[in-house]
Every structure is written in C-alpha cells, then in structure tokens.
Length: 355
Ligand code: KG4
Ligand code: ZN
Image (tube, rainbow, N blue to C red; front, side, top):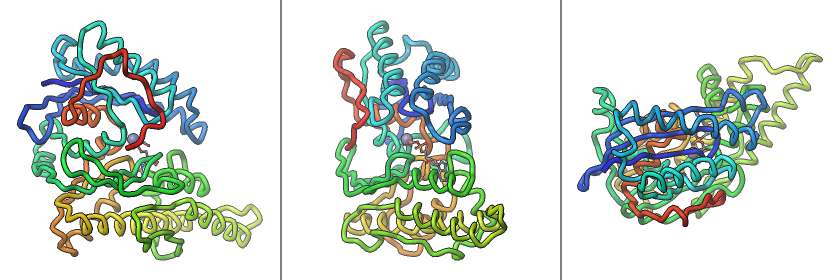
C-alpha cells in the first residue's frame, strides 16, 4: 500500500510517500519533502499564525507534486492519503485538511485523519530512504510495550504504547513545553528564533554546571513536567548579570554559552529522569523519542548513555533529525499503522486535538 502523507499543522508544509506491506513493522520511505516558512518567522521572532497559513497556501501544491515526482508516482498510484487534522494552528491545519479532502474527492482516494502528536512517535517506524549508514542505525524495530516521549515546540508528553492504536497518556507539561521553553530562553539570550537549535549550538562551548537552574517536578510521583519556572529563572539570572556588566549591559558570548549549556542540561535531566521512571514502571521494551527537541544531539547522547548504564532492557529509538522535526512521512506512517479511513465529508481540522 502506498500512502501520501500531508502535514501542515504549523510552519512546515510537508508531503511524503511511504510504502507499507501488510506484515511490515516499518514503512519504507519513498519521498519526503518539507518546505518551511521558518525564515519568515525568524524575522518576527516567533510564528504569526496568519503568516504561517498564507505560506501553507503557497507551498502545499508544489510540495505534493515534488513528493510524487521524487518517488516516481502519480496520484493514481496512491492508495490512501494520511492528513494531520490536529493539533496545530487552525489556519495552517485547514490548508492541509481541505487540500486532502479535495484530492480524496477528485481521485476517490480514502482519507486517514491523523494526530500530529502520534505522528512524532511514528517517525520511529520509518525505514529511511536507502542509505547504508541509516540502514544499520535503524534496522531494529520498536517492540511493545513502548514508552514514547514527545518533545516538540508545543508539547511535552509521555505516553505508554501497548500496541499500534493503543495509546495511554501518562503525563505532560503543566505549562511550557520543552521546545517552547528553549525558544523563549533563546529570545532572552538574544539568539535567533527558534531558540532550540541555537541553544544547542551555543551550549557546545559552554559549561553545563556553571548555572544551577530549578528542576520542578523532577522527583514528583507523576509523569508531569513544568518548564515555565526555568524561563523565569534564566530571565532573572540574565537581568542580574546585565546589572553587574558594563553600562550597555550586554551578555558576553561565554555567558550565553554557559547559560545555554546549563539550560540544556536542566531540561535533559528532567526528560531523562521521568522517561526512565515510566520505562521502569511499565517494563518497556522500547523508548521512542520524537519531536523537534529530539533532534538535539546532547539529548540523544544522554538518553543513550543513561540507558546503557542502567541496563533497563529497553532499547532506545530516535528518528533521524529530519524525521524528528515536523514532516509528512511520520503522518503517512501513522496512517499505515492506524488505518482507519473516514469519508472526506466527515474530516475537519481540530486545533486542540490531544490523545
Ligand atoms: O516538532 P517540531 O518541529 O514542531 C512542533 O510540532 O512544535 O518542534 C519544534 C521545536 C522548537 O521548539 C525548536 O526550538 C525545537 O523543536 N528544536 C530543537 C532542536 N531543533 C528543533 N530543540 C533543541 N535542539 C535542537 N537541535
Ligand atoms: Zn510537531
């Protein structure tokens, strides 16, 4: 079965094709195209939903055409269309949903409405386009029960997955998501938007133990997170440093690096601790990471190190970096493993969709 996936929940416009066989544990990636309006939002220091939606309109058809042509496919070869119907920005979601509905109607192709958050988990069920290096890295298949940590710009959630389609939400952030905290802290440090990758870059030359920031809920009995206090603590620290500095009150590069490294460590410590706790409690055979923050190399390495030292018996899965951030391949994969076609008339965007 060949599935065309479409993703337009925020500032990325994605179209991808995957092939899944009835007994396969992973789908095969045929093409994966992402157009991003990020440079536009970088200028405004954050996403203006209206602008993101306008960009989606510009990109959606060219991106679909390119995804088909890269895979040497035509619409007649597509068996189903998987489309993100939430959560996300309503204007952006509508472009993808209405495009998918139109294609479904014209070409008589079944539609599979798909949860974007589930998509981040299913990025771990994709066999990337033939590449010797990746083949070795990704040859294993996640086994159940699995604990999935979704760390994106808008969400930080821990879920238990007993099998495909069986998802239990264990906990999530009570305020800012990890990515959101990184983006806000990036702004405080004067880094470009989105802060996550820039903080990762700055952290490379920083001391992660220079600043001790609060780790709320790290020892709590639940699987919840809280990151808004971290942002406030960084803000106070930066204000104090500026007061002591020259009259211009700027931050020097080393301080930015030290704060970045310390913030990164704080967030990773909490994420690892809670995920390991969930994996132990539910005897997880796999730990699946997903979402833009999972592209962070230190996060990946810390998880890897922790799991190897703890001997938990759970294998770690992390998507390639391009499959960690928003893309349509993960949506197509979700559609394949949760195949439930819905008549196009009944599909609507749902910005506040959750688990
Ligand atoms: O999953 P995603 O692409 O979009 C959403 O669904 O939100 O996640 C975007 C988030 C942003 O907060 C961004 O700063 C963060 O992922 N991010 C990173 C890195 N790359 C993206 N955070 C830390 N390190 C990175 N390398
Ligand atoms: Zn996302």
